[in-house]
Length: 95
Image 1: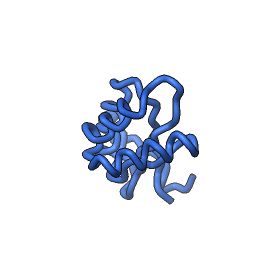
Image 2: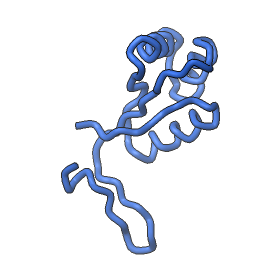
Image 3: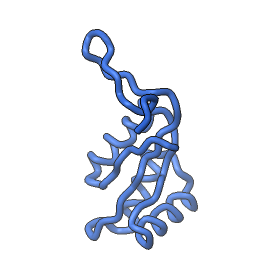
Image 4: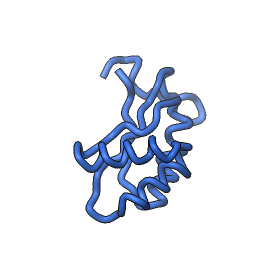
């Protein structure tokens, strides 16, 4: 990781994430149905039905799919909502 990608601590203990875009990555599992994942993507990530279907299919066939791009703050909120739905998601910084 470059220095720009490294998290720095601000005074007061708050983390400061570097400017730039982050990706919310959905990982495949053998637990949830396509319908469940599609509905979660539409609800949490504001996907249209077709977009949610495509992301679910890519995740199923390739093992993961970047389902949303944005600031760390926005992506972190979506990650938390997806985790509450028991979906496996991670955040990656975009190169």
